[in-house]
Image 1 (cartoon, one colour):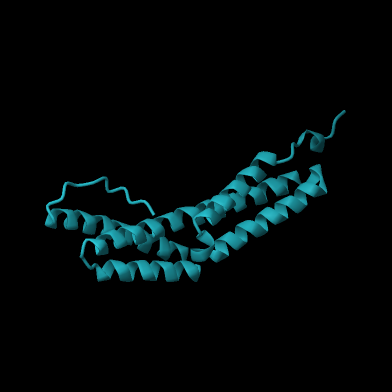
Image 2 (cartoon, helix red, strand yellow):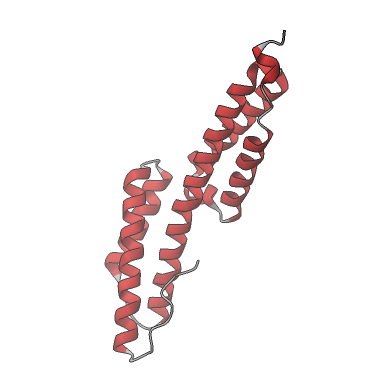
Length: 155
């Protein structure tokens, strides 16, 4: 008769997913905006690696920690992407000769909140800043009588 533990597979896919998510977040510099999230993701991945080495009895813990690491990294990536998109859009608005100080303040506040770990508020302000930037670009295009371009802002 086989024991229940012998049927547990190592969480290699979850570990790989976590590593890839952390690397993707680092690639867009999420560690600059959300250092605590990236540090947490890396700690969880390291813990998962230790548990994986401990053997089959710890695989479920390794899987859990790998999943948490991935979630932290994905969230950091998404929020950083929003911040970078808003920043890029704001630069486009400025390049067209327009100033949107309120949007600039929103973006700075979102970055500060992200650095201090208030992610819910940071996310809301970053989304608001991105929305403001998209509106500013639309208004700038209208004021300059320019044909609208694809407003999907890329960092």
